[in-house]
Image 1: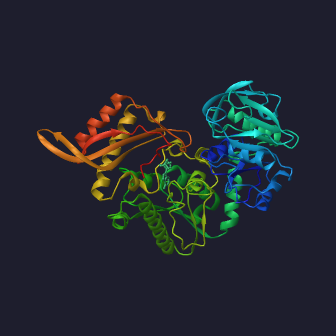
Image 2 (image 1 turned 135 degrees about the vertical axis):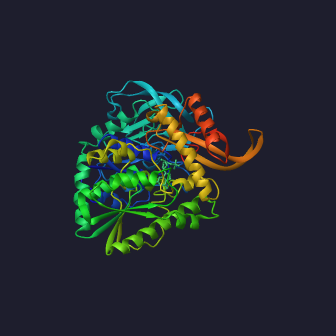
Image 3 (image 1 turned 180 degrees about the horizontal axis):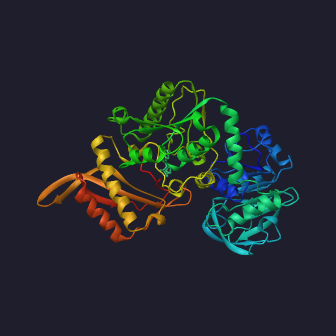
Length: 515
Ligand code: XMP
């Protein structure tokens, strides 16, 4: 989709927080894209950016195989902000010296009291002292000519550097992380004070541009949309309905791995809309393909592939369908291995797709949006709040919440337990204190006692996370009495489960889903 917004390019050197940088920039109403550091300079120039941000990364700039950058980027005349590795890379490339920090000197990790020179544009209108989040083993022993030191800590004299004339800024800490006080304000200063941004990234504007672009692309063609009833595909459906009306058919594939009654609820919600809606009952087909498979990535690939095959078949029934729409969003794209970051999971709507797809093209109108932006777009399109605020449910459904091999019996067991968990959370009016909560059927069985008899049944795990972006998440402190009610009800009401555990791991190091 053509982009007419002021753009910042975030060059990805493989750091953990790269998506967060992009999100923070967008929160400042400036559009940005994450590109791998290997992107040719010509391609970056063609995006006509107003500024560049180098992300952090796990390497040391002085090592031979460390990621580098075309030095021409520094003579092009564009402002650059380097974060952590990005800062060291800039210093190294421009003639400074970066070395490994000694154990007790400038190596820093965690919250660090930092002192700022507030005459520097990056720190304008900020307090002279505040906490930043550090995570570095190297430090800048000598900064390049033309740079001055603009922040320091008790351990490190070079916490931030700047060459204000050329518009080059470097920070050793991570302004994108919430633990850095005023971090977003620093990014805001870079965008508005240094790059001269006006802030033209708004959802109303995006919506208009996206609708026009879809109309131009689709023309009079027919479009098929994969609808799951989740926020992303529902918003994509609303966007496509706005753009091409009844040229659109929404296909809801019930793979038999939905939550309790969900298939009927989705059908009830969408058959009220003025769109073509088809429900395909494919439980037997999916469970057949998944029988005996326990590897998480294989499950994801199988489901991704089978989805596409079902759509192709539905497309043929409708006849001459040119386009397939998917509700892929930006974190899916990044987490599925764009750039240099490690592949965490193959999200079924990106990495899980088969190589060959029998449609003229796949349209992913939300591909560049973060979740909160998708919700905002949904509101812009007039979707009801209950749809816009639904908790996420992954495309592969319960398949990735049943550890080990999948059977209908296990799926039914999990469905019942999950429904009880959600019901009790609703009874306790706790829905708004957590962002995603669900049950997981582990493949661990253990001994219990029910009445006078011995049981040897499954352990069910409860999972709930509180998060704003699903990239990092904290486990929710659910009151014990609520957990107790859930536990008592599940072991009494769901046959086959005799033990309940609560997952108290954050992301990272765990992920939200178990597989
Ligand atoms: P993880 O487990 O990666 O989950 O920490 C982050 C968020 O993504 C959802 N998720 C998916 N969504 N297709 C989707 O549409 C998928 O394959 C998929 N896998 C995970 C997960 O539910 C959580 O909200």
